[in-house]
Image 1 (tube, one colour):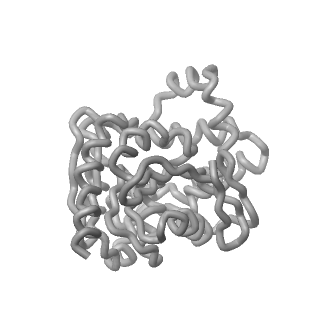
Image 2 (image 1 turned 135 degrees about the vertical axis):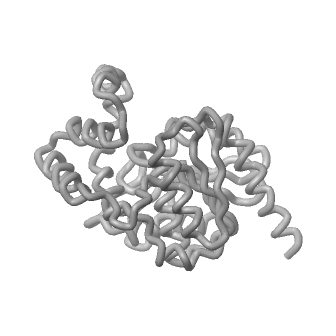
Amino acid sequence: MDTTLSRDGTSIAYRRRGDGPPVVLVGGALGTAADEAPLAALLAPRFTVVTYDRRGRGSSGDSGPYAVRREIEDLAAVAARVGGRVSLFGMLSGGALALEAHAAGLPVDLLAVYEPPYTSGPAGRPDASRHTALLHRLLAAGDRAGAVALHLARAGVPEATVARMRRAPLWRGLEAVAHTLAYDEALLGDGAVPVGRFASLTARTLVVTGGFSTPQAHETTLALAAAVPRARHRTLTGQTSELAPHVIAPVLEDFFARDSSLRTAS
């Protein structure tokens, strides 16, 4: 992987594949660039696809106290390495980061997100502060396994499934990035869709949910699509929060292909 420096000097690791209009993939909670590799490989024949390790994950650094603006600066630094103006696909909390980055001024041609974990109600998550406090206590005590289990339970993963995951090789990797769960909590705040902030978005936006996802995921993505001026909503039959790369890839190819037309026309 190559590296670039964010504004505060933090080293951010990224990988570039393919050739064409630039598309940056922004991973969700507990994920690294390696998790985005299968989708990147499917998109690379048509686009320059960039995957990167978000701050505190994989091969990227983690300087200073966390702030959402620093993650936005990280994404901007990665985008700058492929020309500055990009299209984005954000998965789960990565979708929230992509939206926030564009709202903060990152030049974006097209923006696609899959189930950013907001809530549809204006009051957000009523237990957000309690959950965040518990997460911070677990991390302060060094209980990374407990922090991961807390996150998975909140995401609706059954207790029996979490128990099986604890015995699997992947669990060690989840624990390694458990501290970044606090970063995602800061990114999402109280969980309510930031309607006022997202009203300023100018990129054409695709908000996607899975046909087998929870009713709340459907409600939230519809609310998000309504809040973003140039957004449309799409449901992918048979998908859940565990999105299959081969299902989303043709959807993104079709959506991001418009980027090629825009650039040619300009």
